Length: 294
Image 1: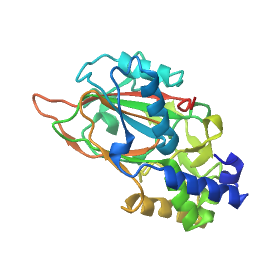
Image 2 (image 1 turned 60 degrees about the vertical axis):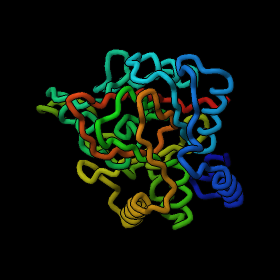
Image 3 (image 1 turned 90 degrees about the vertical axis):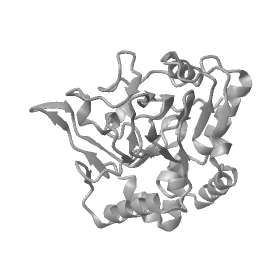
Image 4 (image 1 turned 45 degrees about the vertical axis):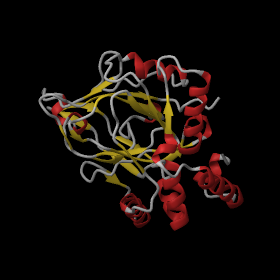
């Protein structure tokens, strides 16, 4: 990884070019290259642990496949996170008491107002883009207990690949998106009470362990972009690249016992349908640290 300042300030092009070429040469090309078979995610073997780290070094994500099936044990994502050095879980408002979120269709007054708890599609985003600067999400685990009867496919894009495509198109896009006031998420106000203050910050930012990190949402409402031509052009470029099938991406329909562990990659979700016999249930664990590389 080149010095982070050279990625955020656009200095030292030769360092960037070497990192870019190595990144592109090592990047997985097919979903199958991300898959790691794991006997028990609560107790990884040394080889399983290293295989997950290898995928995350090359693509910032891995997909694990286990024989756990529809075991509802929430220790599966928690113990996996501990072994990957992820540390403290993010206790977000929709999470359960143990800070692991149960993602399913929920119709109570609190959850029904938030898209993750509906069957509606979710646009491209990174997790926790509305969090305060000191609580930015660096990694998450998404573990499948039960898929939906139909749909619910996740798209996955490595943020470093998006960075490369944006910089190759026009370095000015990177300059605009590193502005400390590039993207503002307005405060969340419910019944006149402020549940969460406004979140203001860059799109590309310094991440954990000296790595590049991304904070982004493709939602079109309740978001404020810095009001200048450079930022508007950069936002349009991101949206164009996210729609471009040539932008490297993976599509994963998780089966019971499968999951994604990643350094907060860009992801989306297609609409899904539950049935009387099969209601979607996934566990999500969010962390402030990146996956430990050693």
